[in-house]
Length: 108
Length: 112
Image (cartoon, rainbow over all chains, first blue to last red; front, side, top):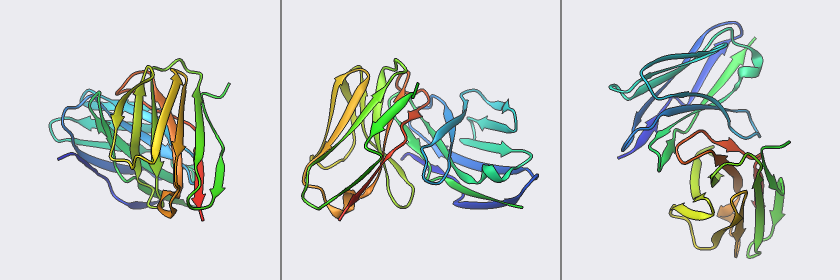
């Protein structure tokens, strides 16, 4: 079957580093996406990985291991505005499936 | 210069009514989608259109009917609304099937 697993909730402190994990099983693979969704807003695209390794984009980095069906999103120097839900999304050209999202709370 | 827009933002209506939600994208993308996000925050794809042609039609009651008059528009019509239809409906577009999504702001539908 196809599914994506990610933790439901995480808590971290302002200024710290947090890693949000995602494991996936898909039929065919064309890449893995991470999105951020603030409460009451639409998801916004954060990152895309199709090859193994780490992609860095400012404070946010995303890692992929295709052989392990595993990805993580790394958030550094956490800010209060990073409190949001982080959605993992993967699949093939025809169909991308979604995780339920990880709700991250950043505390002062 | 809004990329993906949808109207209305809020929709409150009675059970049994028929309503439509409109979506437009000005990104020149080939593929457009309708997603439903329920109270548990799970994003569920409903439909996908590529160049006005339906390519994904998930298990959705046939009370829901998408219409794509052209590549830049994908509207959603819902007949005989039910309480369980209450959710946020997101329109999205992508350059092609399998690339990242640009989401509209969402339409919060409440059925009373």
